[in-house]
Image (cartoon, rainbow, N blue to C red; front, side, top):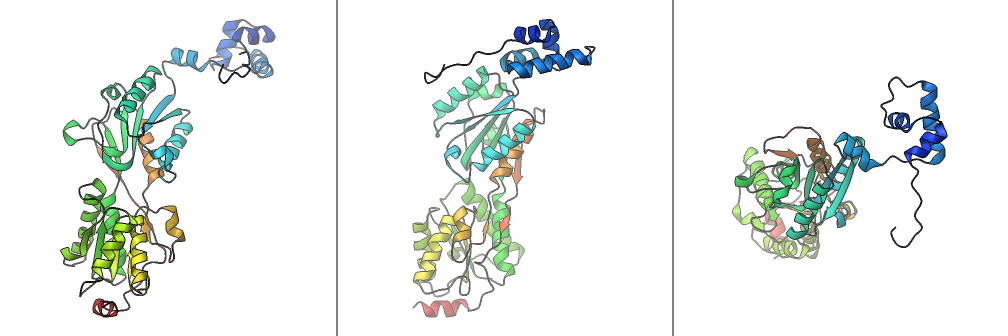
Length: 353
């Protein structure tokens, strides 16, 4: 009994059988859908008796009989407390529920000790598979006991030398290629990239995508237009001010996340430049506030729901798959922050000297 409340007595199978005037064996066969050969009138009496008494089958006992618990577990670092990344949980949960499975959720808050304890606790509950999910795309160390059941990683990955699980990641490289191409297709040729922390997975992949787009459209990359920030508005603000203090500033900015784009917005406004009339801006992540920015921010959406759903789908495939990496596309959210360049870069420079 939890919290001192009154506990309701569980109705037993014997009570159902007594009310239906059948043996406990017959009642069990009917209630577990193994009633072949039992007359319809008898089945009706059993189900009616169960409904009248409010009988609930013992899930643990059923699991022991079937040798299946009809449950899986998702272990996260911090996404359970992050609204937009919580879509990972929703995607996994809806897929699991559609396959009549429960999803246990444990938030480790980034603690390796909690992750290990969670895996062991879930294995004690005889789960059929594990999902590991991360708030930010990053390398993780998988607790050794996880190898006991099928495991899929969502938005995280293992060291290549230790890869033992399927990994489902956002396709950041292709997404940044698309973001940059939106600006190129609008007529921009002098485009700056404000990236995040050096060396992170997203930093590497989004930088590659930016360069892919320039090369594919025949534009020569200018290293002076690639700036490394901190993923935050303050860093992007300073970098934008630096870019537009140069004699030949860009006409468009690709910001590697939406928070950086907000900092760029503030800097451009302080310089008297209009978005998108004077400078176009594209973000990444599709945080909820992006649609309420003025102008509304064109950005790339991280496919959190799809990551969770696909990870769960792979777990339910029933195969012990060899370690692979599957990339999920990041769709574009076209809004109001991109327009053809209406002034030259040199004119923008003149306005701010």
